[in-house]
Length: 133
Image (cartoon, rainbow, N blue to C red):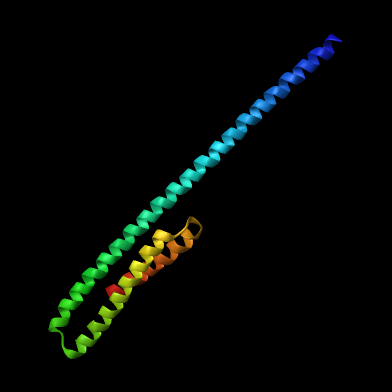
Protein backbone atom coordinates (compact mmCIF):
# COMPACT_ATOMS: atom_id res chain seq x y z
CA UNK A 1 0.00 0.00 0.00
CA UNK A 2 2.79 2.38 0.88
CA UNK A 3 4.52 1.56 -2.40
CA UNK A 4 1.38 2.53 -4.35
CA UNK A 5 1.20 5.91 -2.62
CA UNK A 6 4.89 6.58 -3.22
CA UNK A 7 4.37 5.62 -6.86
CA UNK A 8 1.33 7.95 -7.15
CA UNK A 9 3.21 10.86 -5.61
CA UNK A 10 6.22 10.23 -7.82
CA UNK A 11 4.00 10.20 -10.91
CA UNK A 12 2.26 13.38 -9.77
CA UNK A 13 5.59 15.15 -9.25
CA UNK A 14 6.88 13.97 -12.62
CA UNK A 15 3.65 15.06 -14.33
CA UNK A 16 3.78 18.52 -12.76
CA UNK A 17 7.46 18.78 -13.71
CA UNK A 18 6.70 17.78 -17.28
CA UNK A 19 3.90 20.32 -17.60
CA UNK A 20 6.09 23.06 -16.17
CA UNK A 21 8.93 22.15 -18.52
CA UNK A 22 6.56 22.04 -21.49
CA UNK A 23 5.21 25.48 -20.63
CA UNK A 24 8.71 26.86 -20.29
CA UNK A 25 9.70 25.32 -23.63
CA UNK A 26 6.65 26.89 -25.29
CA UNK A 27 7.69 30.26 -23.99
CA UNK A 28 11.18 29.66 -25.26
CA UNK A 29 9.90 28.66 -28.70
CA UNK A 30 7.63 31.69 -28.74
CA UNK A 31 10.48 33.97 -27.73
CA UNK A 32 12.73 32.42 -30.38
CA UNK A 33 10.06 32.96 -33.03
CA UNK A 34 9.68 36.59 -31.99
CA UNK A 35 13.46 37.13 -32.03
CA UNK A 36 13.72 35.52 -35.46
CA UNK A 37 10.94 37.76 -36.78
CA UNK A 38 12.76 40.82 -35.45
CA UNK A 39 16.03 39.69 -37.05
CA UNK A 40 14.30 39.18 -40.41
CA UNK A 41 12.72 42.62 -40.18
CA UNK A 42 16.13 44.15 -39.36
CA UNK A 43 17.74 42.45 -42.37
CA UNK A 44 14.89 43.66 -44.59
CA UNK A 45 15.30 47.25 -43.37
CA UNK A 46 19.07 47.12 -43.80
CA UNK A 47 18.85 45.71 -47.33
CA UNK A 48 16.18 48.22 -48.19
CA UNK A 49 18.35 51.13 -47.03
CA UNK A 50 21.36 49.75 -48.91
CA UNK A 51 19.32 49.50 -52.10
CA UNK A 52 17.99 53.03 -51.56
CA UNK A 53 21.58 54.28 -51.25
CA UNK A 54 22.53 52.41 -54.44
CA UNK A 55 19.61 54.00 -56.29
CA UNK A 56 20.60 57.44 -55.00
CA UNK A 57 24.16 56.83 -56.24
CA UNK A 58 22.76 55.76 -59.61
CA UNK A 59 20.68 58.93 -59.74
CA UNK A 60 23.75 61.03 -58.98
CA UNK A 61 25.79 59.24 -61.66
CA UNK A 62 23.06 59.81 -64.23
CA UNK A 63 22.86 63.49 -63.32
CA UNK A 64 26.63 63.89 -63.65
CA UNK A 65 26.65 62.10 -67.00
CA UNK A 66 23.76 64.26 -68.24
CA UNK A 67 25.61 67.40 -67.20
CA UNK A 68 28.71 66.24 -69.06
CA UNK A 69 26.76 65.31 -72.20
CA UNK A 70 24.94 68.65 -72.22
CA UNK A 71 28.29 70.44 -72.02
CA UNK A 72 29.61 68.30 -74.89
CA UNK A 73 26.52 69.06 -76.93
CA UNK A 74 27.38 72.76 -77.09
CA UNK A 75 30.59 72.11 -79.04
CA UNK A 76 29.51 69.00 -80.96
CA UNK A 77 29.17 68.62 -84.71
CA UNK A 78 25.78 67.82 -86.22
CA UNK A 79 26.56 64.09 -86.39
CA UNK A 80 27.87 64.00 -82.86
CA UNK A 81 24.94 66.11 -81.64
CA UNK A 82 22.43 63.50 -82.80
CA UNK A 83 24.27 60.77 -80.91
CA UNK A 84 24.64 62.90 -77.79
CA UNK A 85 20.96 63.87 -77.86
CA UNK A 86 20.04 60.19 -78.07
CA UNK A 87 22.23 59.46 -75.05
CA UNK A 88 20.62 62.36 -73.20
CA UNK A 89 17.13 61.04 -74.04
CA UNK A 90 18.11 57.59 -72.77
CA UNK A 91 19.53 58.98 -69.54
CA UNK A 92 16.49 61.17 -68.95
CA UNK A 93 14.33 58.04 -69.34
CA UNK A 94 16.65 56.28 -66.88
CA UNK A 95 16.17 59.17 -64.44
CA UNK A 96 12.44 58.57 -64.56
CA UNK A 97 13.05 54.85 -64.00
CA UNK A 98 15.22 55.58 -60.96
CA UNK A 99 12.49 57.80 -59.53
CA UNK A 100 9.91 55.08 -60.15
CA UNK A 101 12.18 52.48 -58.50
CA UNK A 102 12.64 54.76 -55.50
CA UNK A 103 8.89 55.13 -55.18
CA UNK A 104 8.37 51.39 -55.61
CA UNK A 105 11.05 50.75 -52.99
CA UNK A 106 9.06 52.83 -50.56
CA UNK A 107 5.95 50.80 -51.29
CA UNK A 108 7.49 47.33 -51.56
CA UNK A 109 6.44 44.69 -49.09
CA UNK A 110 8.62 42.04 -47.54
CA UNK A 111 6.85 39.34 -49.53
CA UNK A 112 7.96 40.90 -52.83
CA UNK A 113 11.28 42.14 -51.54
CA UNK A 114 13.62 39.54 -53.01
CA UNK A 115 12.15 39.84 -56.50
CA UNK A 116 12.14 43.63 -56.36
CA UNK A 117 15.74 43.71 -55.11
CA UNK A 118 16.92 41.30 -57.81
CA UNK A 119 15.16 43.22 -60.60
CA UNK A 120 16.42 46.58 -59.37
CA UNK A 121 20.02 45.39 -59.02
CA UNK A 122 19.91 43.88 -62.51
CA UNK A 123 18.52 47.12 -63.91
CA UNK A 124 21.26 49.16 -62.20
CA UNK A 125 23.98 46.86 -63.58
CA UNK A 126 22.61 47.32 -67.10
CA UNK A 127 22.46 51.10 -66.65
CA UNK A 128 26.05 51.19 -65.44
CA UNK A 129 27.15 49.25 -68.53
CA UNK A 130 25.21 51.61 -70.80
CA UNK A 131 26.70 54.69 -69.16
CA UNK A 132 30.21 53.32 -69.62
CA UNK A 133 29.76 52.78 -73.34
